[in-house]
Length: 217
Image (cartoon, rainbow, N blue to C red; front, side, top):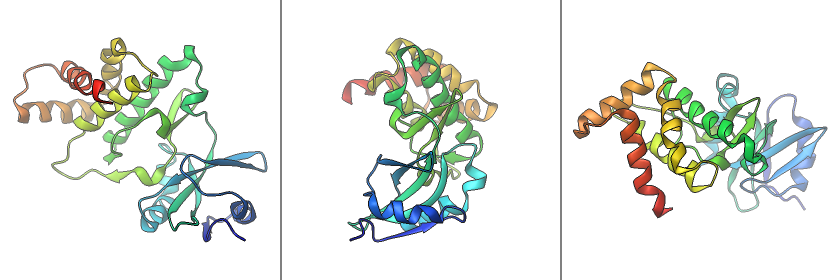
């Protein structure tokens, strides 16, 4: 009996059809096939999964490589990605500084190109070659006029500290890593602060906002 209802696979990955019959689709689950590792990430809907698959070439800079999607036994849709990096739990203590910086730089790169993601957590990325990439390409969406990147930056800072990957004392460094990526990031944050009537610097306001919500998670 098949564990998953059906699978849609990109050309060249038809060989995954049988392995996908044997592995339950579940958030964060993974399996190995032909020396490659593949992981499952829940998609909001099948159209979201389809879009991730169709847009894979354009998103390759930011995400793991999507090779298809499956409908699980309960009817949920999961994107299947080829994973080439390490998860947060596999990062050594002496690599956490580079890892947390890479997460903030990835968020900044997404915002610079007009993508939102709801904020990043350590569990949502993989680490390879000192770069962090999203495990779930269907998490991305296009930012629209009037939306702000401030809350995604604060959410990501909070997640890094709450998970133990970074310390509160690292927040100024991580905020600077985000803001220094491009003029786009700085402009969006400053514009948001001006609308809110905030007088602090962009870095200070990011840090203060992250510090306020850390105790609640």
